[in-house]
Image 1 (cartoon, rainbow, N blue to C red):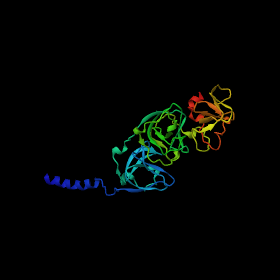
Image 2 (image 1 turned 30 degrees about the vertical axis):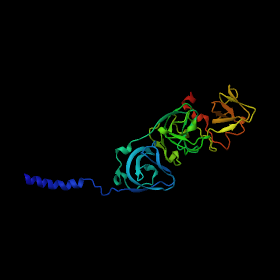
Image 3 (image 1 turned 90 degrees about the horizontal axis):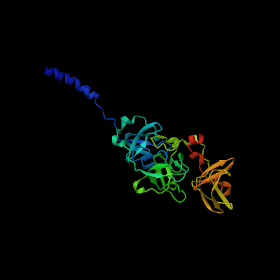
Image 4 (image 1 turned 90 degrees about the vertical axis):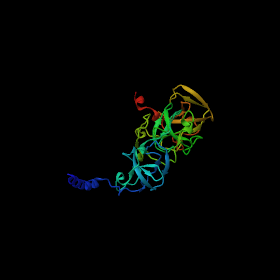
Length: 317
């Protein structure tokens, strides 16, 4: 009986060895190249809302990927790669790899999939475009109305100057709002710095990360903003003896405020009624654009349309 057991064990041993996993093909790293024409972010965790540690904003940047993990689904793929710098890049932004990362690299571990965020609540004072990066010319992800509550996740002072303020805040909508549009400046000592931010485009960086549903609408389904210059919350001056600011963009609407000649006025958005352009001011009333020295709908400005900020269901009702 004992000899039979030995013989059986001798037969099983080769089978066990054949079935045992082999790590001979696992590589210490794989050199990856950023897809030509794409900028990308290297994040502190594999989630869209996480701050950036690095930004790859030169075509065909190269880095060494040391392991793979799962995170926010970007353009249909939830795979992210950890660079030798210790930050994570979405697989979608990289040149296609001739192989399987799950076979050729080690898994980064369950802890790598966790999302670590700082958060602070804030409320918008004005109508605000929430952009994919902190510049007026970046794609608008959401049009947020005044009095909208937002959750801030990080801050940057490298954004486009709005009036006198370069600070922008990333929100849980996974887009950036100008600090100037908030009721008050947040205490950034409680928030992470967003890190370096490259130029991004919505068509190449669409994500499925369960971001806030507050006014989360595709701008392409709404009337397109006027394609002009690069301004937001612009200041103009009254060119008539008086400029009446009305409750709605029509001459027959009740006047809420009267501006005087050469008075500086700040504008939020544009509205058109029967071929006449009006602007909603930060006093939440409308002035005919012809009452200003400047032409807010003209070539030097890019103001969003006021209707972009309205709920389509409310408009229909």
